[in-house]
Image (cartoon, rainbow, N blue to C red; front, side, top):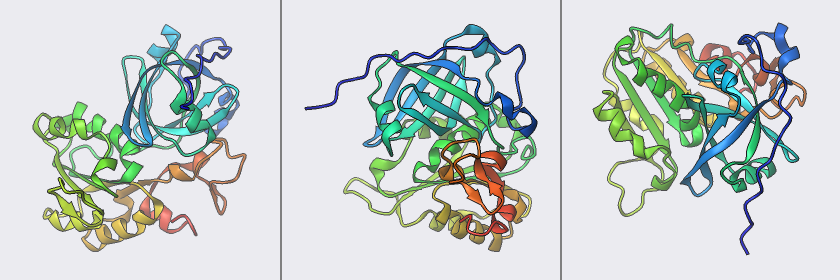
Length: 301
């Protein structure tokens, strides 16, 4: 017997903020408990264990005030069950887009929540990809598996500000074709936004006509010089070592490669200590780091 959808949840909303806060400043950590009321307005299944949720902030003044930088995350609370850190994969017109894999008790309950369910939103938190610094340069966007979720926000930023950037190439690898995320947008990104997209899978099915192997194989297609380019890499931490090392050997400086370590996070407040790497806490000091910094964090990857 399948599990029934949950009834809409509710939370008590605090008084609206009078001005936007920079949640990345540790001096303002007293504000991390402020929770905004959100409502799930749509949910689409992307793969067998991943759904894309559209969450609308209920209060109009909060919708107008909410903004984020690509790479940041929010804490999503399902009252009565707990909360989880989720990277923002898009936000527009008062809606926040969250790509969530069913991987634990809280995310399993979010997957069961129906349209109209209320959730709490704290944030946005964290460091972000330096899109301003990348203006006027070529950009490599490289994702593996669920890493496409945090990478979608910088893709959307580039498409909305296309004239600010040079050549943009997206390299995306997954275990199998059915696990590729946001495949319905690839044609738009290619035709409308002029982004070159290369896909690869480890285990092809009978219908697959693309490349087979790991995402590092796609780097063989890059022919332009990398010393004046930038890269954003999202995916399993073990992937960073191979991809970024290959980029380094091709001439890209390590401080021009940016990775997200958001998979290591849990509480988002530096309390549970599950994301600490030495004295560095990913949820407090990240989740976005340049690869030079990551290489100097023992056991970060």
